[in-house]
Image 1 (tube, rainbow, N blue to C red):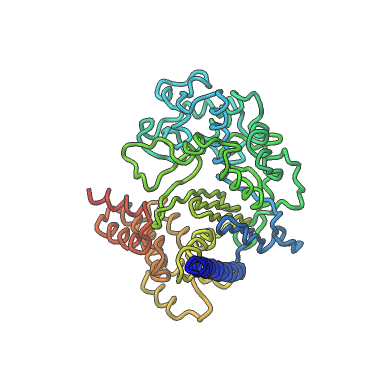
Image 2: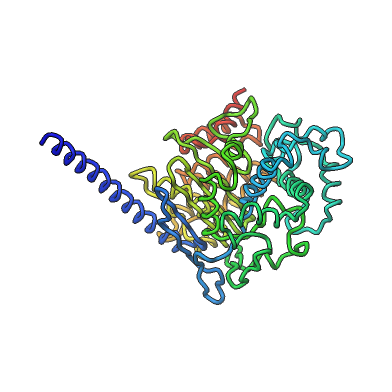
Length: 486
């Protein structure tokens, strides 16, 4: 009888836990769906996929892939994934290493001729981790340039720092990696990735042009005020692929469902070995790096406050925006793609992660990106610049109840002024933004940067500290405070 009683009690215990977990998951799903519905109302246009506990729970489109024809985004909508491309370039390099065709320790002199002495010691590892010292770019995404001219321009460019000593996000480095993939495999970049990565993962709607996309499903990209930017495939390409300013570092097209297949494939050893994946997420890092957060091979890796690992990357060209966030230990994945980048909404996955992992978190719904708020934002900017901050504050306080400032309009204007060395004007704009958004870490981070550029260390530190207080994970603010206090 005792054994039977114990079994019954254990059964009831585990049933209670299971029921509680299901109830909690259903509550999270409801909160996520409510948030996404609200986000669509204020301008989100894209597709979202959320995996909880290893299950594909939510997969849905919002807004329009073609606004004129009122064709809605769906789970089949095809987007430009931007710099999510880099994870495929990195994985292809590791696949070639698995095949014995290269080593990440190889220097670029093995693959390119006439490498100048200052760049001769750059390794594939350095390119993958953005520590080569090469510049971020040497041209715009869709500029026509031959492979030879691209390589020559890169090799002549001065290094930004000694090789392997610092970090500078370099699209150039990943374009060189694409060329290495082609040299070693004797295939086009896209074909090698398809045969060795995408096909094995079941991804038949990913690539530059090889999938022969249903062009009706490719989202039209939109600028602010819904002006048409167009489709990536209508831009200036080098035949069936982008020129090297984009190839290998960005521009691949895909769907949320295909990226989810890639996510699932990376949980097995079928494409990349266990050793290759360890290198993908945890390569050798520099002595001065923080092991809690670093750039690995095509992925940004950090430790959460739950002592789990977050693997993340985004991609953007100010039109399309893509975000891929993976909590591998917790079997949770967030994939978002948008055809209308909006700085107030692009952090969608970060909000979703807080909904999932913070029980009482209330997600932030940004101000609606409508004509009224656009005009009011421009009016406030003009008042700050012509009449001063105090006048702008009075105008802001007397605004109609449904009217507000768009944070990214003021942020963009502030940085425009900062680039022109108009420090006081930039500080005025950023200060106005911090008044409108007192809980925005970015508002105070940008204000801190403006004061730093002006040479006011005390005010810079004060605002960076406020930014860090609002977001304790803001590593840039933390780093800037240390530098300013030295």
